[in-house]
Length: 112
Length: 219
Image (cartoon, rainbow over all chains, first blue to last red; front, side, top):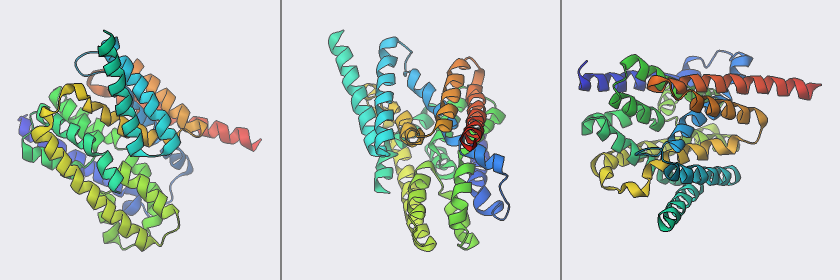
């Protein structure tokens, strides 16, 4: 398939599916009762999906998975997790994670 | 909503850079950010496109990653029910992780539905607009940002900010632990199929933990 066509097919189909997911219970099924088991399962979609998205991004550093490249990312992500848990604040979580990563990377390049 | 607009800026830049890497033209990169309007789906799409994955795999992976919109939609539905249908259809398009997080706080605080919806609409439009700007900036100048800044790390941090506050009860912790273990254990699977498998396992584990916890506390 032509690359441009494939890209626009992805945009159209994923865009439509995303919009239908967003619209689902607000408009399409708004008069329907959600089965209790489904409602229960929904609650754990963000925790499960976001974790599955996040972990591979942390343990694989761009340009290879050398321990000295990955270790600071794991520590910085843990620090960010604690800050996020305590503050519920995106900006503080982002700042804590980036600052600890930069500090650790600076410390490693200074010692080696 | 201003903090959220700043918070997603590095994420938008990374998505723009990813679109370049996937060989997208600037207007298809803009089409992607304007129509898909989901950082997670965009990142997955450009990575899978660059890896030459088939269309069906790309669509399925992005859909599963977007399943959380079903949950957000179900949670928002009672608050949006008093509004006209056209409002509902418009507001649904603006439903993102960040808009949802802000909206539940505001609607939950007992504001009048119309007032809270107007606030959500304003915030959602601001998020959408800043998402387009940051994606385009990332597309055109993102490659000038030195790799040593590790800007890509801002993407997992945005998700950590969303998921960490949920770890106050046992079931979401179980869901995340099982899903996290599975995504790494199954990382040998091609075309990011580990994401779908791990997400499903995590959802089942969280639901089971919830059922067990309920039975335990009822006794």
